[in-house]
Image (tube, rainbow, N blue to C red):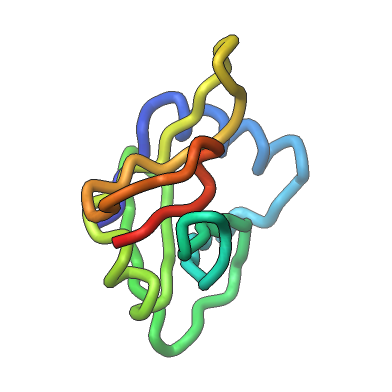
Length: 108
C-alpha cells in the first residue's frame, strides 16, 4: 500500500485543478537509480496505466507505481510540507535505511 497525508492530498487536488488535468489523472511514483544515497524518487501526474502498474487509493487520491518501484516504497507515505524548513512533497519511507538531507534519495 502507498499512503497520502492530508496535506499532500490537498496539494495534489489543488495542482490537478490548477493545471486543468483530466478527471482520470493520478499520481505516478517511481524509483530509479541515482541521487546521493543511491535511489531517487520521481513523482508525476499521469492518466495512462501500464501493464505492470500497481494501483492504490488513499483519501480519494489514486497513486500508481510500477512493480519494481513498489518493492522499494511499499508502505511509504507521500507528504507535503509548507513550512520554513522546506516546502514541497517528500516521502516517509519505512524501508529506507538512510536518506539524504534533501529527502529526494534513499538507500535500502
